[in-house]
Length: 169
Image 1 (spheres, helix red, strand yellow):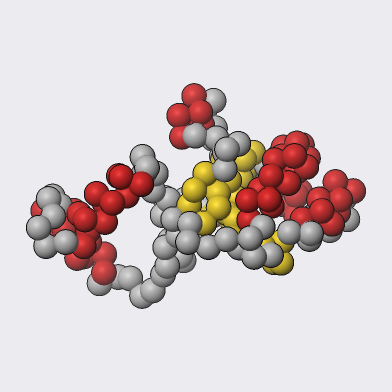
Image 2 (cartoon, rainbow, N blue to C red; image 1 turned 180 degrees about the horizontal axis):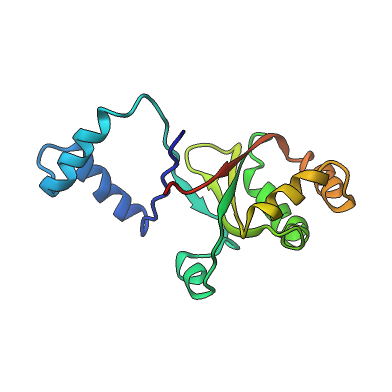
């Protein structure tokens, strides 16, 4: 098993305060959080972080809660793009993939570029159930809509990796 944590931060100022709280001796980190971090490091064997910046069309947390998005799992796509094309790739997702993806049972819950890089985009899709996921996989290489999207995506995307994220009990 692997862990994927997603944290929503209110902006760059909040991020600076978070970093101060984690990494400075004079931080005002609550003792319980300090213990949690210490305990967690004993179980961590690696990992990496990304700072994600939402695309203009990415739903906000408030919008997702208001529309009561629910699902059994999440499909995470990490796309490596041609250098400098991550934002353009996401524009193409908005224009040409959102509607076909929705018809396939995938609901967008996040679209992001990665800060400090210009060649990576991260997409998160809600899967209402595993049948939508397996139906999507069953013809992803042969369905007209997905083939059309793949051809368009190759203009910007060098590679991508999709991972099924399932919440732990």
